[in-house]
Every structure is written in C-alpha cells, then in structure tokens.
Image (tube, rainbow, N blue to C red; front, side, top):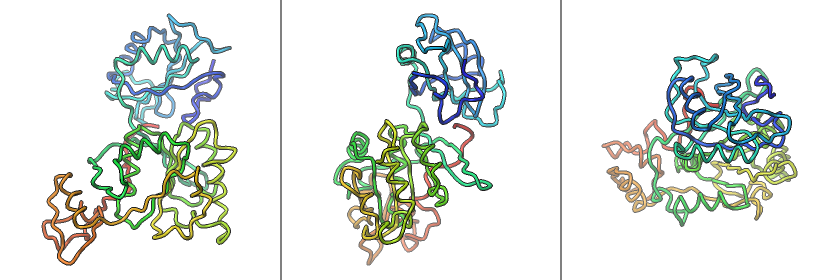
Length: 359
C-alpha cells in the first residue's frame, strides 16, 4: 500500500515499482462524490481508498476487469487535479471544474485499458507552469494553469520563415533540446513561449531568481519531476561565456540540458535574453546538436506591422517617420497615433497569472 502522505506532487510514482504514469485531460464535472462515482462506473473499478493532498484527489482503485500487475501492490492510483488549494478535506459539496487533468499510475496494461475507457470524455488538459522562488532561504514553488488570453498569428513572427505550428512541431520532435530567443523587449518572446506551452499542454517550470538557478535543487526537481520544459527568461548574466566570466551556473545548465543527469526523456530548455547579439553567450549552449535554433526577435517593418495588426483585427496607423515597430507598440496603439509605444501595458509581459489551485 502506498502511503498517501508520501506521494509528492512532482513525483507521483514514488513507491510504485514498475509503474507507468499517463496524463489525460477529461471532461467531467460535479461534486467530489459524483466524480468518484462517475470514474468508478466508467473505469469499472472499486474505490478502495481516497485522500486529498496538495490540491490533488488521490484515488486508490481496484480494477474489476483487469488484474493489477504491480508487484506488491493491489491498487492503481488515480490522481485528479481539483484545482483548489483551499480544499483540505473531502468536501461533498465541492464542485469539480468541467475540464480536469488526471494521472493514471499503474502497470502498463491497466493504465492503457483505463486510458481507452476515458477516450469518450477526453479533452485537452491545460498547460501548467510551476514558478520556483526562494522563500525564507529555501526553494519553494507555486503552480498555475496557463490559458490563452488572445490569439496570435504567423504574421506576428514573419522572421521565423515558417508557420508557428511548423516551428513548434519541429522543436518538439527534434533531439536537440535547447531553444534560444534574443532581442529587445516588446518583440513577443514571452508570448511566443506561452503559445508553445499551451499548444502542447506542457508542464513547465520557470524561475526569475538567479539564486535558484545556482542551486542544484532546481535541476534535480526538474529532471525527476513531471516537467517537460524549463523556461529561463531574461537570463543575460547567466548565459555569459564561462571562459570570460567564470560563470559557474552555466555548467549546471549544460549538464541538466545535455549531460549525464538529464534523465530518460529529452526535456526542453528555453532561454530568452535582451542581449542585442550572441557575442558574449557561452558557445557550448549553442552547440549544434544541443541547440535546436537561435531566433533573433526583431521589430517589424511597416508592411509587416500592418499585416500583423490586420489579422488580429486591429486598425494600425503607421506613424510618420517610423519604419519599424515592436509587437508591443502594434497591440497597444491608441486612437491617437502619437501615443504609440507609450502604453503601460506590454504585449510581451509575463505570461501567466495567479489562478486558484492546480499543482
């Protein structure tokens, strides 16, 4: 029996030898007892035990149709996100959201059977991101869901030379796992990353604290945890050439990205910087085979800016004497064109907002 108090939200398979973990988004809603009854009926299982931990509903179930083959274990573990960190106990009146993420942790045969039974109510799980930071001298983290706040189009990134979908899919499938984005603020780097994470329902990790990046703990938790993308934004000083700056953090990043400790899966690393050139960046990070691509995010020409605004349904008015515009300027232009670029709202702002619960 797995002790629910020992189940870490980042390492669900602790204590479950030879198990697999499958994530699936499902369309299911109702009170907690109702959701349990629905899952019991759909999966043909008997719920032997349940508990709440870290905004997750942990259900220990026994399949009535498929024998569990995990040596020494009699239950399959279903982990359901209830997305409400204030929920500490099993509340019969709590309403589970319509779309939820669930993990099936069992042997391969049972997990596959359960997955197939859930296909009729399958939906896309939300992308998630966990923010790592220092709290009272120790690394802590907070998880949130990512949602689209507006549609972006290929015309917003004409310098890619291909569609967003083609680029994202290429990066996802390639063995190279580093993506490097650089350019001035407001050119859409963060929005570009956000769209990638949401499009493929990634579980991402991020930090803005250089002290966290200098700690081994972040990389250990990323490698062994349920993450597939590590995002490091505005990492100007952390990307400097080790030979010129004595940058010790870069060695940790390189080992996590493509070293002995990277783990079984090919996890992705996305870096952004406002540095105007790559001259001072450690060349090892950009090595062929490790780095999938280096993209210079630039301002758009007047023609490109007009096209970008048009597909988004905006009436963009070029300013006399201006030849180039950032996406921030295009999306924040006021009716008075003299105010272009002076809006306090940045199109390239941080790409997630706090939402109740999840992770």
